[in-house]
Length: 296
Image (tube, rainbow, N blue to C red; front, side, top):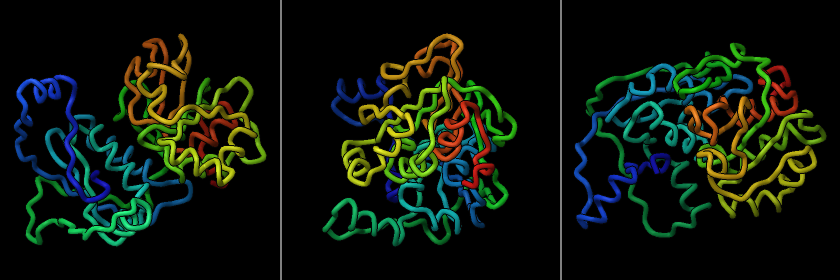
C-alpha cells in the first residue's frame, strides 16, 4: 500500500482478535517519520532490494520502531511501482510502522493501466513544511549487491563478504519479490543454463495473475528449462509451513523478507536474503555469487 502513496498498518493475530472481540479498530498513535532521500543511479546488478537491505543494515531491526519511513529522491522516483513495493514491503524489517512513497506519475500510471482504476485519483503528499524526526541521505551509486546473513534481517553486508557460501536451496518469490519483473530477471539469467547440481531452485509467483502472465510470455518455460521448480502462487516456504521447508544443516538464499532462525521451517537451517538477480546467478553456481561477475 505504501508504494501507492497509501498508509497501511499491519496488525498481528492478537490485535486482530481484539478487533473482532470489540468490534472496532485498535487505537494507533500517530507515528513520527523518517525521511530517506535516495539519490544517484544504481550501479550494475544493484536495485531496490539492495537499497532496502542496505537501509535496514544502517537503521538496525529496531531503528525505525513506531515510525514511518518516507522515501524520496531521484532513485526512488525512477523506480517502477514494483521496485517501490519492495522497499515499502521491507520497511517493517527495520521496525517501521510502514513505508511509503509519495504518489506521482508512476503511481497514477500503475493505477490506470495495470490496476484498472477509472475513478478520480486524489493523491496525498507531504506538507511543504513537514517535520521529520530524522533525514537520511543515500547515494545509491555507492551501494553494492547486498546480502542479509542469518539469523536477522539487519545482519547485512556486501555480497563479497559471503561469496562462495554453499547453498542447498534458492527461493525466488513471495510478497517481496514474486512479481513479473522479478521472474523475468531470473529467467534472463537462467535461459540456456542449468541450476547447479545439488541445488534446488523454487519459484513462487506472487499471484495467479502473475503466474498466468509469466506463462504467456514464456518466462515459466525458461525457468523450468533451467531446472527450476514452479510452485503454487503465494507465500510458500517463506514462513516454513509447506513447499520447501529446509532440512537440518541446509542453507537457503531467498528473495523473501525474513531470515529469522526457524523461519523456513527448521531452526537448524540458515537463510540468507538477496535480490532476484543475486539469487538467480547464485543458483547457477550452487553458492552465493556476486552477480556483477556474470555481467548482470
